[in-house]
Length: 99
Ligand SMILES: [Zn+2]
Image 1 (cartoon, rainbow, N blue to C red):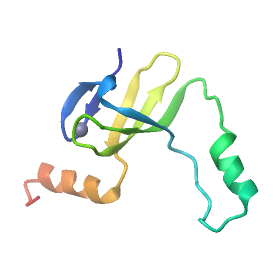
Image 2 (image 1 turned 90 degrees about the horizontal axis):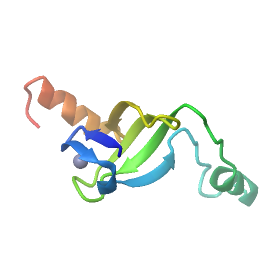
Image 3 (image 1 turned 135 degrees about the horizontal axis):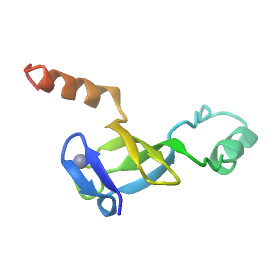
């Protein structure tokens, strides 16, 4: 069992989330050649160790998260919002500002 500590909802079982894949991939521009899209979509590293991944809290707050997870032990090192705007809201709330 993997417990993901969602920054918005708290600790939740991974079954509430959808796996989005490797978060380190830089996708090409929409009008990029097909071979660039092929490489981005189909050629993946099979990392043995810590990997940044995207997870979607489908059955929760529906936020996209960046999860640093060890692919061998499932240890989770960090969880943060995938979008900078959501991260800024969390920081503002933690500092006692308006949300
Ligand atoms: Zn959540």
